[in-house]
Length: 252
Ligand SMILES: NC(=O)c1ccc[n+]([C@@H]2O[C@H](COP(=O)([O-])OP(=O)(O)OC[C@H]3O[C@@H](n4cnc5c(N)ncnc54)[C@H](O)[C@@H]3O)[C@@H](O)[C@H]2O)c1
Image 1: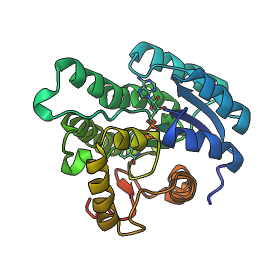
Image 2: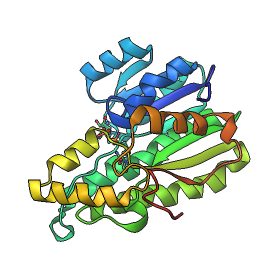
Image 3: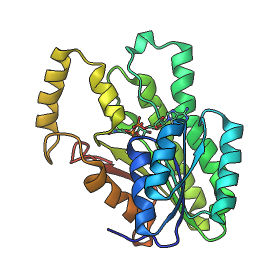
Image 4: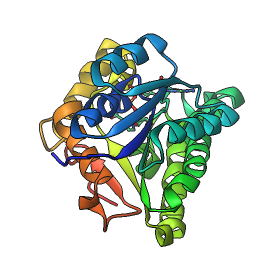
C-alpha cells in the first residue's frame, strides 16, 4: 500500500463506514488526520485507536463546516488531502419524496460537497493537493427508490468534474469514488428490505458483481485505493469516477 508520510488529511463522515476506515488506517501510513462526525462516542474510540484527531460536526451546517475546516487546517499546519465521505442514502418511491426529504438529501450530499471543497480550496491552492468526493452508481445510471439520492450524487459528479478542470492550474486533483463496499450504510439498505426483497437482492448481487458476487471489504478492497488516490502515485489522474465496486459499473 502507498505510504502517506507527512500528508495532512481531513476526513468527513469519519465515524462510520468509508470515512472511519481511512481515519483508522491513514495514521498508520504516516498521515496526520483530522476527522469529522456526529457520533462523539465513535469519534473517541477511533481517535484512541488510530491517533487521528476527532472534531464533532454536522455537515449540513455550512458555517460550522467552514469553521471546522479552518480549525483542522490550522491544527494540521496546512492541508494536502480532503476526503469528503459524509452522506445519506434514504429509500423512497420517487413520487413520495417530500420537499423535506429532498432538501435533507441534497444538503447532506451535494451542498456539503460544495461547502467542504470551497472551504478547503485556499489551503490546497498553494502547493496543490487532493479532493476525493463520493459519488455513486445512482448518480450515473440512476437508482430505483433513491431518486433524490441519485440526483444528489449526479450533482457531486458534475461539480467534481467542473472543479477538476478549474483547479488543475493550482495542482489540485479532484476525483470521485463510486464504491460498492459493505458498510453500515449498506446494512441500513439491507435492513429496509423485506426478507423476500433481501433474498432477491442477494441473488442479483451474486450475478452482478463480477469479482466475488457481493460488496467489497473496507480494509482490503477500499483503503489501498484511497491511499493510492491520496498519494503522488496518482498525480496524473483527475476528474475521474473511480469505481471500487468489483466491476459492477463498467462505464465512465
Ligand atoms: N457503501 C457503499 O457501497 C456506497 C455506495 C455508493 C456511494 N456511497 C457513498 O459513500 C459515502 C460513505 O458511505 P458509507 O457507506 O461509508 O456510509 P456510512 O453511513 O457508514 O457513513 C456515512 C457517514 O456520514 C455521516 N453523516 C451523514 N449525515 C451527516 C451529517 N449531517 N453531518 C455529519 N456527518 C453525517 C454519518 O453519520 C456516517 O458517519 C457516502 O457519501 C455514500 O453516499 C457508498
